[in-house]
Image (tube, rainbow, N blue to C red; front, top):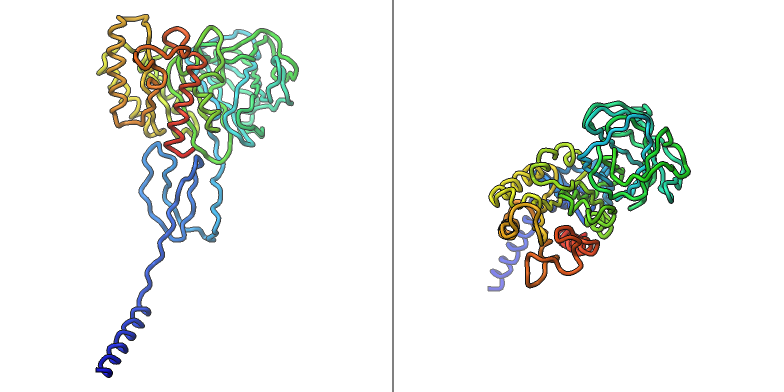
Length: 423
């Protein structure tokens, strides 16, 4: 018995040695990940072939090749231009003689270089000279102005409804820095409908290089400047799409910094640019999407709050169809989010009973649709016992949110986005 047992031990040991000399198991390759809000693709230790990322999801990594010189640390993503300020500029203003506009805007992204995109209005536009500087008080500049160029020239001339982007210029900008962009123009400039940019001025003549107060007259509408893009490592960036509620209308004079997209930007520390247009519905957004939203650089997510102006003008079925069309057009460009419509305490069109029925039906559809993620802004602005009324203090006229209403909306948007992306 002892000899047989010893024989079995020898057989088992030999079998183990043979197994140890066989082919080894390949090591598991590290999977790329996208952490936080910064888009990055760590290099794996072995080649990895991945499925293409779905449209509009910038955090999903793309195909990865093995590094030529493997390193334990991942190099940062290459800097890229992403929009740090935006306005849709649906309307138009013409100036017959050379005029200088000085527009003060907040920049929602930090970086060392930037570029500015201008938009012409309903006619040709000639821009003679443009500068950018840190904003001072009462229309004065807080730094020496830096001249913008366009394909190496100091200005440009274009036809109706054209977008022209400046050459990149060295201009260190911090998050939420206020800058003054001064530009000398004749012709038609695209502009927004509401006063939402206090601190702006216009003056006849050529004064873009003036460091002191521009003088002239106050000008508080967004005009001429469609976007400011800042170069930095890519991060998540949001675009807000909507009507006057999102643009920030509350009264005759407003401030874009009090609108919910700007407040979300402050809370997240990420750009949330505003592409809303007062008075519009789905038709206006769909017709103008190619010029007002899709050219925005580096957008990763679109936040849609639209449909209030279409109540009673469109059936609920038409509202659903047009929202579906908008979402599908946005998907190749960004990850879409849709919000429920806010309470509406009165109406200028149709009957109020129909407004209440249609709004409730459309909101129910928004909550159950699966085309886009949902932000339920009605839930945080409605009275607990009446879905059609705002919580006291959250509205100014039964339709538009107050400053406090925008704060409540922004807090909910920021909460949902943090939960989704771990921001």
